[in-house]
Amino acid sequence: MQIKLHLVADLVLSSDITKEAEEILQQVVTESNTQHFLRGVPKDADPKEVGRITDWNVSGKVLNVTCESGSYTRVHDALFRFRKQIAAQLGRQRIGVRSIEISSFLLTLSGEDCSLLKIPKLPFLQVLSADTDEMVLSLDISATDCENKVPDRVIRLIEEKNAQDAYGGKTEHWELIFESETKKKYSTLDPTAEMVKRKWIKHGISRGQWCHGPQSVRLFRAFEQIVLTEIIRPLKFSEMIFPKVVPWDVWKRSGHCKGVYPEIYYVSTPKSRDPEYWEEVIDYYKVTGQVPIEMIRERIDGPIGGMCYAQCPPFWPFLQGETLANDCLPIRVFDRSGTSHRYESGGIHGIERVDEFHRIEILWLGTVEQTIKTADLLAEAYHHVFEDLLELEWRAARVTPWFMAQEGMVGTAETNGKGGNRIGTTDYEALLPYNDTWLEFQNVSINADKYPKGFNVKIQSGEECWSGCSGIGLERWTASFLAQKGLDYENWPEPVQKLAGEPVDVIKTL
Ligand code: ATP
Ligand code: ZN
Ligand code: MG
Image (cartoon, rainbow, N blue to C red; front, top):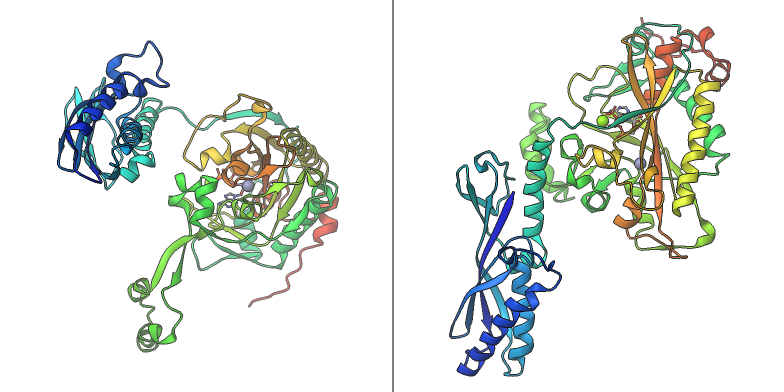
């Protein structure tokens, strides 16, 4: 795709432009077109691709300029380079630039069937014309938007959208790295249905939500105990409590704002804490027995963000802007303080894909070597747990990193640089004999510098800071375990028997 840019702007100066000033301007225009705009441009670049001033005129205090460019020194960059030059040159005449008005910013796309191009819907982007050869778009933005590189991001987004289409068939990456022996199976039934039958669990009232009875929770806690004794204590992870309401600022830095919207449980807050402000709502409910959703909607702000989604992002403000002392690295922490919430796609039946779930999130950071080393130690510990304690039939696969998947990306991470081939996510999957599918029950990720960069975290030594995380889904562990071992205590491996105890029906109904 070729992109041509055309910009018209008024530079409002501090006083009328004199004949003398006009001569200086002519010189600045020439110098800009022949020198300043060529800075950083490859020598063999097509001159039509390079930003240049194609027209200018003055009237009173206003200097009107027209810029054109292709992909080098784009029109808005050219404009600001030009402003810098005239500020310096006209400064001597005591004339300054007061403000800049963008009167028109046009993008002309060509080089493919433009009638088929996918154009993002943005309030300030308008399609003026489109046929097979050419599409003309108009950007209604301010000089500040231009300085903030909005045009570059619009162009990148158009390129991305249309490149994605070109690789339409590309899916998430998946590559087997380990597969266990087959293990003896004690069940071919759906564990959720069996748990419901035995009244270990019951559907919650909210979508994709379960209330877990004592029998189910004892299994959760048994698994949690295994994680504590086999992984968390030997590898010296310290417990923290991460916040569970996540404001946009956190997801802006973690990258989730780039794509997570369809899966968020949104959080809103009251516009006022004053009971009087809510009196009508209260009265309406008292009289009708109906909760007046629309009246509530009028009285709330936000959404201010969402409920915990990926668990580790809200840890990072704890370190935001900090430099970490060498002697505390690697930092190893974990959180098990609350639920995660995702608006999953329809057809959620089992406990393994729910809107409200429980996860232990393990997180570590340090130098590149320390981060990779911790991931390797974790992988070893998990291997031991799944083989020797839970006796699962399981496998591990390298997949599209979760931090890319959640931004709507596919493929694998960048692999350049030190440790680059280790960046990414390993999914752990267990066989579900009842439907012969594999369930991802947890993962281990080396997230490279994604978070330290996003939250501006540095290391004293100046070495690159990396981090990793591993999400242990308790519903998924339970579903995997019960799918293979069944609900009968006598068929469970001894370590689980010991920790969970025999299920007891504490609550009995008639
Ligand atoms: P899936 O592809 O199965 O939806 P995911 O790739 O979205 O999983 P991650 O974002 O990697 O999952 O989340 C990390 C872990 O959190 C998972 O390995 C799993 O244990 C747990 N998890 C994620 N989504 C759910 C869910 N809807 N219900 C229960 N556990 C979940
Ligand atoms: Zn994480
Ligand atoms: Mg998912």
